[in-house]
Image (cartoon, rainbow over all chains, first blue to last red):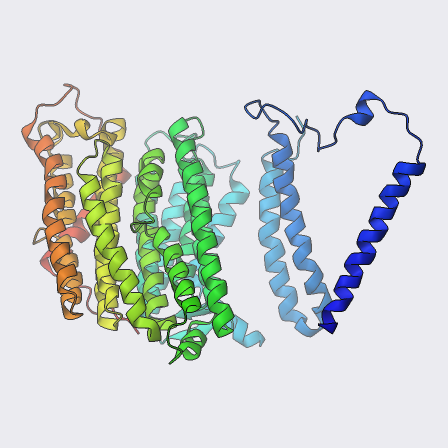
Length: 117
Length: 472
């Protein structure tokens, strides 16, 4: 049980601190509401909408491209940590991985996925 | 360690050829639009990969990547078969006027990547590589089905296939995680060692059941079949031909290896699951095919029934039974691609059952070749279909599953009615319009010829495959 105690304490501290900040901001902060400020914020689109309406496909294209780089970075971190132990083999393997991802990136660029039009 | 990795790479030459060709085409995609480069490169890559896999057939078994991948006669046999399905699929996609909406270079990239995933899956001796390979195939298939975005039917098919496919993948993963939880490994040999004499705890049975359910989805075995008719109907005909052949063969190969290597000590329970899947697939597939009026749906239900026949070989849980399934998968791929190929050759007209009315009078050669594939699908002697059905039903009898074998024979007779209905329309009805269908592109004719050649040779020389259908 003891080894999980740290996690529980961490949850309590993090939750308490975050709650405290929100509470302080709500009590002490100045309030000058306007229509824009009161609008719910959700990545550029109204959160409550008729679902049959059209959605701008651009957001999804950007999201997919983001995943391409996101996954790349997620794999780069652990690789960087054990880089010395893996040596040359790790470098070659990571280059192959990055090369394949790069092909996807070049394809997206080549087909004008990065142009906001 | 470096040398070991390099050795692992040498086991994956066929996969690397396909992936290399796919990446090259992706880089060039915008520049080779509207040319013949993409289909030509795909066929060449498939031939290259098939040749490399064939060279590996007689090579010694070897494992690589720390026991993730194996190269043995079983994996190489299926890799050759997958390469053949890819080559025929690419030939069937050929059109005299390069059609940018239906087959852009990305279409061929997806075909290549899907095939490399299948090859990876049949070489896998670890549940994780197996899952990755199958998932690569499935994700490419989702896109291939929905590629014709302007057609509502394609969109519907892709969404249905995607939702059900993701659910099945989740089942498979859940099963894998339960198996891992019980055995502490995802390696086939390790699982078998850990489960030796472990009996059957309820948790293990759930794990086995979920893994088998996830894999049964990939070969569209009843009750995990409902995606297939919709997906084949919505997809373009060459895609349907490809999906009904390659992935199904790969799925059967994977089920065979998992049953015989990972879960060899649970043979009794596995054969219970496989017998139920086989019996249901044969029965439901044959009966539902009776009421179809759309040719691709008819062939989809036929392919469901055939998945059941192919599973007959695996019910016994023996190497001989797996050999029968290898033979079945091989001949099945060519006769199904052939039958779908005739649908491709006839265009829009070939998608309706009524489109076959009076075909024999208008295009005698095409009608004759369709007759050949339909006879093979029924299992009439002197076609490869008879050879294939004979070996699997024999395997079922040898395993002592006589009622199952009788059901298979009875449903073969039912299926004869389905296929003969098409023949009657072709030979004994008047054409519904006087216009004869256009001549199919030369490459489509070539693919039909190749599939027909295999179907005839397999019927006349039934033992021709025996040297290669070896389960290690």
